[in-house]
Image 1: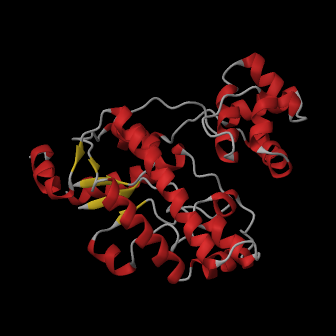
Image 2: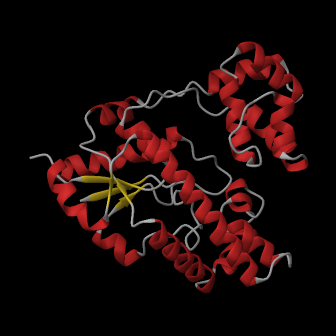
Length: 290
């Protein structure tokens, strides 16, 4: 068996404790693809995910192994399992300009100025992605680039760079694979909350604050993935003297529970079956192909 990680944070190098990456011993038992793919500061897009996922699919096919796609990024799972059509990719110049504005303004104020609708307007990454998606409308795209202080030529250059074209070998590998089924493991709300609290406390006890300190030493402290990710933001606040360790732990628990709730809502909206952990083997046997 081979696992493909659909976790948007485990893809980053140096982010280990706060993302719950499998240990080296666990990786020897179950090889994973999609881990440690990019350095912090690189935007891990769905295109990159598919590129690394294709490598896992190729290895599984060549070795005659079964593939499990695991993780909580619903979009990544959908685009692979449901063959979701891809939109245009990231726009480099717009992304850089927006990051500058988002570093100096409230994300919801930027969203309002751009005229984009965002479910979580306080999340700068979501505002950035919403702006990129809005550029599918040429008129709104022109307004967004103008507000960011970019010339019309920048929009044309970005459009060419964000065509979302996957490598032919990647497309070929993806076309050879189809998903046998998708299921959501759910231990129940109370048990999930208990596990979230246990995991968060273990993260901080295992050195999450030190991990953030090392990320800062490496020059990654202000990258989006470190500055805004759950747990990493709170650990940074401990380093800056803004939160006590216990307060950071409590805040991380709350944010993780909120994220888990959003995940459950998303998965439920997709109609994916929810199964108890004790049912996993039966479900796997029922969906397995000969």
